[in-house]
Length: 204
DNA sequence: CCCTGATTCGC
DNA sequence: GCGAATCAGG
Image (cartoon, rainbow, N blue to C red):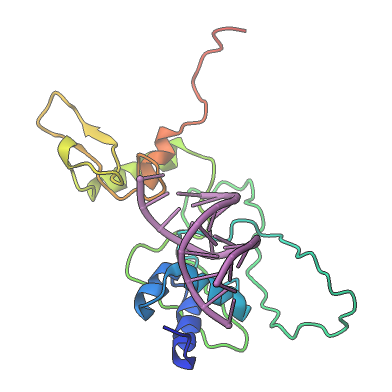
């Protein structure tokens, strides 16, 4: 399989839409995700703009100054200067109310065409700290749509958060998908990882 | 362990 | 130019 003009176009389109390399490879067929990524790089599109951060993975390391070997290059890149939404640090202002919707990211010169795969919209700015109230609420919410798996139904990527009383008949595991190699889903990770709270300074 | 993209390097 | 192998983060 070679890179036809058509295939390249599909690649561009899907990449711009935020599809993952593996998905693109699957769609195209005959190529692996490595091939797709390689082609993407060769084409010069490395980063995707558009704001639709489809969870998953974002660029690992941002600031990556290339070891510019070209000394003389007066020609500036005619790249579009897309001004991303400013992301100031969260202010200390108490705001228990979650943001309603993600702000659209208009791309200048390009029609906005965010293909959002069905699913839950990921909060663009997941608040880092602040656990107890929020996390617990999240957990409660999550538990409502938990799959209620039994112990045997747990797999490698199901949330293994126990819910209920083991002594009761009303006991089950969350079972929601947990992709990131964590034993729990996102919500439960939040509560499972209570940094340090009530812990008496025993020693010292 | 699953996923993601990034980079390298022989072809 | 191509992409598998490898690297690196989540």
